[in-house]
Length: 222
DNA sequence: ACCCAGGTGGCCC
DNA sequence: GGGCCACATGGG
Image 1 (tube, rainbow, N blue to C red):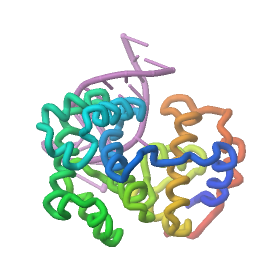
Image 2: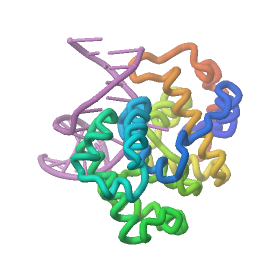
Image 3: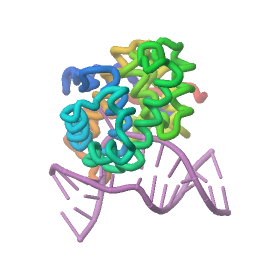
Image 4: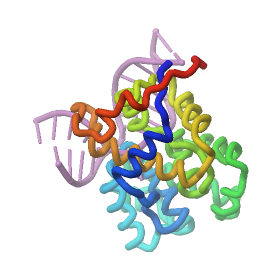
């Protein structure tokens, strides 16, 4: 199996794009809301939905609980899938309300593995949303693997793994368990993909494209 | 008019 | 355990 030098890739991306300042939110709760709203959705559309919630003064756990599903759906319409997402947001808030007295701080106080398991048990929170919440809101080192990460690894680094779980394992085994590093790394991969790795065209101007072979190293299969 | 976006769950085989 | 499908708005 060919694998890429993740630290060198990181350094190249960081020097090319600079710090990304993720997650763009003012509170941990806002990160959670954004993580759910951005499921398969352009961030621009999510921003509008969040602005609507802010304007309505409902961007809080209690605020969302105070809305009916229908009212909430109306406020987050611009983020798409608004019926599903309204349900998911309410479910998340109800869970924290019932099990942690509405305190994200208490919820996030759990060890990473337990926190992840609980998040994944909630309907509408899958691997990416859970890991985004853990990394960007709870600030614990869980590497986020999204469609971009898979695509970039396959195209530029010749990394083909059987599943996202394996890819996550690879990143976490290879990199130091550092929240700041995971934070910046995922954001940089998204930035790279947005600029140079759209689904159809394979861009030749990509900063890592020419250097691709540079990152390839052989490692034992496992 | 297409294609795509910082996915997830359900259903099928 | 993989391959489809629905979910939905808004920007390029």
